[in-house]
Image 1 (cartoon, rainbow, N blue to C red):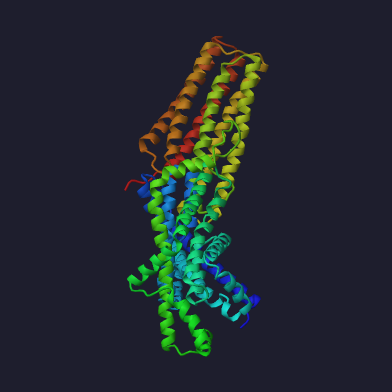
Image 2 (spheres, rainbow, N blue to C red):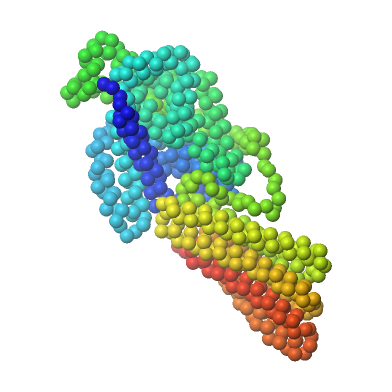
Length: 605
C-alpha cells in the first residue's frame, strides 16, 4: 500500500482537528469560568506548593501545558505574580499536562470513541443556541472535547504504515538501532514535532499510535515523549518575545525546568524506562515492550497472519486481535506512566530549587533600565494573544500605569503655575507636552490591545469589561489633555505678560490639592478593579462634589475680586480658565469611578 500526498494531507487534517478540538475546549472552559478562572490564577501566588497544585489543576482542566504556561507568562507580564511564584505554577503545569495523556490512553484505546463522539455533539449543539452565555460556553467545551477524540481517531487511520513502505522503514531501522544515539535522535524528533505543531499532547497521540502498532520500540517512544517536553516550551517563548523582562524570564525558567529534567533522565534513561515498565506490570497492565517483539516475530513467522491484522481482514473476535488490543493498552498505559512519573519526580526535585531558577534566569536575562519618560507599555505588547479572557488582566495593569503617568502630569501642571522664569518655564512646558504626546500614544496602544482581546472568544462579562476599560482609557486621556490645557493657558498668560497675585496662586493650589486627592482615590479603585470598596467609591463622589463647590465659590469670588480691583480682569480670565480645566479633571475622574462601580466592583454575596 503506497502512501499518497492525499493521505499526508488527511493526516495533517486529523492533527489539525485534534488541535482545534483542544483549542475550542480550552476556550470554552475559559469563557464558562470567566472571572472565576482569573480569580483562581490570581490567588495561586500564596506559596510554591499551592502554586504547583494550581498549575496541575488548571492544566488538567484546559488540556494544554502550553496554554496554561502562556497564561502564567501573561500574569507575570501583568505584574500579578512574581517570577518565583510563576516557577511553581509552571512546575505544576508540566505535571497537569499528563492528564491529557491519561485521557488519550484510557479512553482513546479502551473505549470505542465513535460510540460517544456523535451523541456528545448532539447534546452540545443545542447548548450553543441557549440564551445564557455560560451554557453556550459549556456547549463549546463539549464540542471541543468531541473534536479532539475525533481527530485522534482519524490520526490512527492516516498515520503512514511504515511497514508497507520498505524504503522508509529501512531508513528508520538504520537509525533505530544505534543504541543511546537513537534515544537522543528520537528525543530530538519529539522536540521538533512538538515545536512545529505546538502541542505535546498531539505528539503523544501520534507516538502512542505508532508505538502500539509496533512501528517503534517502547524505549524510543519514551524518548520522543521526553523530547516533547522541550518542544512545548516554544509556545511560551514565542508569547514572551514581545513582553517585558519578567515575562521573558518566566518563559526561560520553563525551558530550564525541562532541560534540567531531561539531563537527569538521560543519565538514567534505560533504568528509568525499566522502572516504568515494572510499575505498569505491577499495576496489572502487562509489559509495554511486548507488542513490539510480538508483532515483529509474527511478521517473521506468519507473514500472512501479520498482513491480515493490518489490512482488516481478520474477523472481529479473532484471538490475535484481542491479544494485540490488550498489548496496545499496555503500551498506552506505559507511555502515560512514563510521562507522569518523569514530571512528578522532576517537579518534586525542582520545587525546592525555585530560588536557584530565579537566580539563573536573572543572570541570563538581566534587566535593562530605561528612562522613565520613554514611551513603552509596561505590561502589554503585540505578541501572542493566548487567552482573551485572561489577557484582560494585563490591560487592567497597563491602565493603572497609564493613570499613574497622567497623575504625574497634574503635579507638573501645578509646578508650572508657580514658575515665571523663561528658561525653566519653557523646559517644564516641553516636559508636560512630551507627557501629553506619550499619553495619546498609550491610549491608542491600550485601545488597540483591548480591541484585539475583544476579537477573541469572550464571555459576555468579558465583553462588558473591555467596553468599560475602553471608556476608562478615554477618560484618563482627557485628564492628560486638561493638564496640557493648563500649561497652554499659562503660555498665553506669559505671552500677555499677566501675573497672578498670591490670592490666585493659593486658590489654584487649593484646587490642585482637591483634584490630586480625587486622582489618588481613583488610582486606589483602579488598582483594585476586582475588589473596589464601597467606602472608596463614596469618597470619590464626595471629593467630586467638593471640587464642584470650590469651583462655584471661586467663580463668585472672582467676579467680586475683579470689581474690587484685587487683580486685573485678564488675570481673572486665565485664573478661571485654569479652575475650569481642573474642575473638568474632577468630572473625568468621577466618570472613571462610575465605570469601576458599574463594571468591576463585585456584588456582595
